Length: 324
Image (cartoon, rainbow, N blue to C red; front, side, top):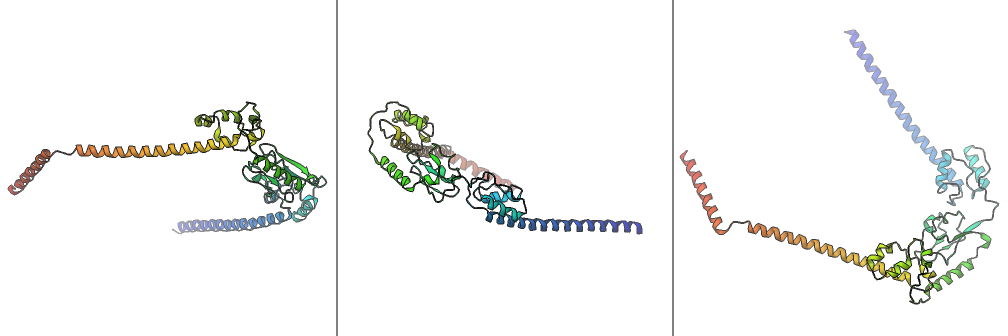
């Protein structure tokens, strides 16, 4: 009996010891995770404050904060051209790393900014979200311009431009007066009246269309909404490039805009007609069900016969109960 009790006691003590060790280990791991995470966040903040905050993505990351987070995980500290070698040295002192030479050093090169060839800009707005410092101003189907003082020359606006109308130029070549003058010329060109001669089939509009459409084919089919939709009417972004190159000065964009409005109106009317049709069908179904229910009711004579039968059954049942 004493042997069994000793073995039971040893088992209880072993389980208690294991549970105690497991709880202590879990607490230490949790505490370490919180402590090191806090330290990591603090280091990321310190690194981020040393970076120039141009958000130019020349380091290969989408912004200064992502680059700071990557440095904490082991990324090189010499990938920031706007920060220069001074930033590399500051990061090296902070992290205790070797101050390597700056990669892609552009400090000795002429500074560049983006310039939009306004006469070719289609107002697609695709360059606006690409600019990390909001240095581009513009609106849909309106002229875009670059704010020289804010542009960091990061080149990120070049790729999304569908018509390649953005150039990177040296800052010394930039002229605010030239930009303003180009804007005024573009606005005046949009205000000019156009004639309504016939299409000559020159294909110039098709070559300039950023959506690879055939504006002249859309023009020829302008009287058939079905045909227009089949050949890509709704893909038109109304960029007005086809108007600018048309030798016949046809108002192609306005024609396509009106056709899309007519298409939307027709779809709305069709949807409303379908809704009324379904409503009428439901009404007819309810009327048919009601008629069928009325027809399935017994006639007056049938109702009398049913009443007599029920009365007789009731009397028979009463007599049987009384007889018992």
